[in-house]
Amino acid sequence: MLSAIGLIGGLALLIYMTVRGVNILIAGPVAAAIVAATSGIAWLPPLAAADAPDFATAYMDGFVGFFKSWFFMFLLGAIFGEIMSASGAAASVAHWIVEKIGIKHAVLAVVAACAVLTYGGVSVFIVAFSVYSLAVHLFREANLPRRFIPAALAFGSVTFTMTTAGSPEIQNLIPMEFLGTTAYAGWEVSLVVAIFMAVSGHFWLNAMVKRAVARGEHFVGRESDDTNTDYSALPAPILCLLPLVAVLGVFLIFQYPQNMGPLSALLPASSLDKWALVAALGSGAVVALIVGFKKLAAMPDAFSRGATSAVVAITNTCAVVGFGAVAKLSPAFQEALVMVQNIPGSPLIGAAIAVTVIAGLTGSASGGQSIALPLIAPHYLDVGAQPDELHRVVAISSGALDSLPHNGYVVTTIRAVCGETHKDAYGAVGALTVVIPVIGTIMAVVLFGIF
Image (tube, rainbow, N blue to C red; front, top):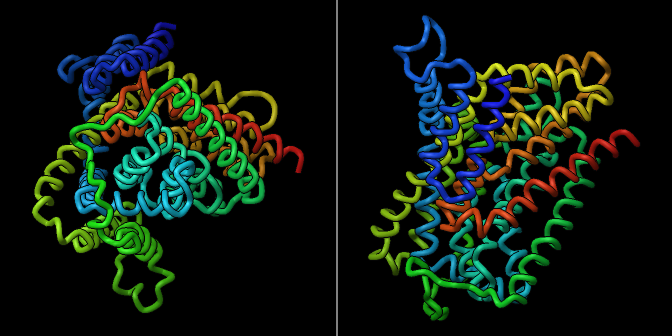
């Protein structure tokens, strides 16, 4: 009982402190320490019994493990975004989009840019860095409240693209290992759900923005913004799209070398997965430098800003990952795993609840899947669940409660990338990345039950 109170209390405290603006580097360890104390886990290694876990080691293992795995991606992604801004490429593309599709579609343009990159396989963390500068220019052109930029970035990245059939994001790939399925499992239902999420989310986001504008909200610039409005001096829009094309193209080449014929022999197996993203972002940054060669003098500062942003962003995420690492050691967490395996009714309902609850506790969609699937997959397959249906429900449900305020992606996007507060920005983010996917999960369960 004490362990359960500590786990729920620690999570609630983490969410409360995050929303109140407490630095996540403080909020994460404090909340995790409470979970450890109520779970009988020693705070320091000397106080722990032989071979028993302790708070400090577990927290830092989670923290450092994420930093080690993702630092280069964060660094290159942040630098790429800063180069796009400093070179004028983001401003040029934004102005061109507004001219072609109209100022009223500025929000849709941001969502679409994120969706293309995400479905192309670029990590959702990096998409925010890559598209942010473009989003700022679009929102400035349309005079829209910039507090909705995180919602636009998140909606285009972690909803209808991240967990849909065919997506190369890890949230769609993890179930394959445990269920023997493919990335296109349950594609018919997935397509219906994805269309629903995309359309309903788009209208909801636009409605929120319009209400804010009607109340008198507008775009407020910052000293760090690129305020260049002399569009005649900017690079041609078609050239400015090349860096984004380079990121997506190089990523796909390195991610799927088996499809490249003779080139396959030149690409080692280690090129797959996240290292493909390193090559892609590096290539995109080089192309962006070439496109903005007239502003090379501004690039040293852009590199410096990008490096600083990357460190802030990744450490914010690491703080949340560390909390999840401690939470997994709690007896209450282990009891919750057993409990969700025994949820009565349809296996799809039990799997959806199990994955999304664990994803919410750990603040990670992939974490929720990785923890739950080894336990629930054999059980639900034994009782007759169809692997393809289970795959799709697990993938979609993992992208629901994972986006609570303490989620690493949410913290990084709102605070580190966009410079907003949870108080101003999370309402829209939560609506689009929690409520919409929850409804999508229910739709998927119902549709699989009907067909």
